[in-house]
Length: 402
Image (cartoon, rainbow, N blue to C red; front, side, top):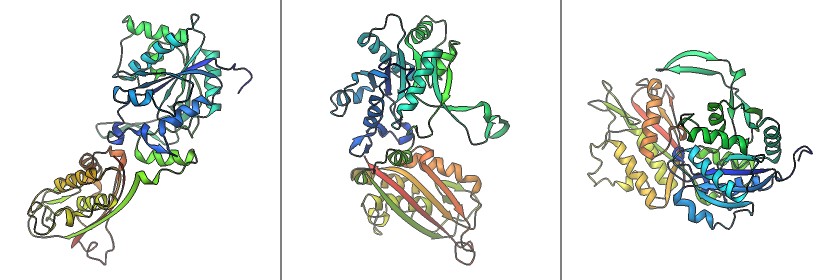
């Protein structure tokens, strides 16, 4: 710790009241890493920082009882409180608890607000944020943007933004308690209009025209947003992920073009293109995903879910078959976590429809689009796919314990 930063000069609020929408509704903070939930690693990281004297954990109502009695809570956690509908409501609840638990009449103590989904928080980053907050009143860690950034409206690129002036915000974000009180009081008094667009504390302070100091962030300080992030976090924490909670499945399907139209592929309709021959609508892409999911869960395949003498799939949309596969693996205790699909077809041209396929598949399996990848290839021009006689699809999926 820096000699300029005294011990226990700060208190932390950990926000863990989100809905994990990009994880398909799964509580990402409960994901097991090394036998402990993800949230436990976040709290342990903060507990290792000598600048932090007390911590309040803010959570949703459905998790409150479980977390209050969790054996892995570090002693630094003084209380588990209920959050609100918006982040600012949850942070306010955390601050009210701190005011009661750790009185600070002068408002000189530092309040650190940290995302529960950032488990790789380093002591050096906390020291940097606390030191800057003591000096400037408020501070946040930021990371440079390395990609080229475009401003897009109505699917048109309007301009290229200067990334030298842009950064991504991380947590913990620090503010002196007196300043935080002032900002929240101004909002409560109606001087500043409350907004659902405040996704972090810096946005709230900026709305109150309170300057916020930026300090260098940590590239390891990853926020878990989609299932694939969990594996990256496990690597950063040097923890082997709990293999018993994840499985991988592979599915393949191929259909020849047949009489009639339209073609259904990846859940999309292609008018004027011959349909694929099959008992259902012949959507080879959705069939491959369904087979991969069933295989990953040890629940057979589409042929066993819908035997040849079963009239259920005859002529039906394959989206219904994929939903049935998702329901079947749920009965076995599993849920989709990620989908990677490649379609091999010489016709029709698929590039313009890949994003729509991605969104459709994500909705069918209950995932955010970020957890689904769809690619297309013309295949081997000497084969039936490349010659335009058939369409094939290969899917690799990851499932996690429900």
